[in-house]
Length: 124
Image (spheres, rainbow, N blue to C red):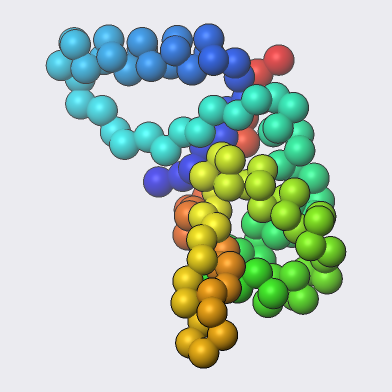
C-alpha cells in the first residue's frame, strides 16, 4: 500500500468521500486507502528539497531524537521545527516526548509511513 497525498480543497475531499460512500452502498469491496488531502500551497512546501531530504532520512532511521536529527541534518532548531510542523500536520511523522533515563524527557520524531511509497498528486 502507498501513502497518497492529494492536493485539493475541502470540496475535493468531500467529493472523494461521496464516491467511496456510493461504492459501499452498491456493495463494492473497497481496498484500503491511505490518502491524505493537502492544501496545494502546503504540497509545494512539503516538496522543498530540505523537507524531502528529511523524509528520506526518517525513512531510513524510522525513529530518532530531536537532537540527533538536528545534528544529522545540520539544521537550526527554527528551520527544523518548521519542517516538522508541516510534516506532522499531514501525518507523515509523529512528534512526541519520551523519558530519557536520568535526564528528563526528550523529543522523538517517528516516521509514520515506514517503507510505504509516498505518491504526490496535484490537480490544477
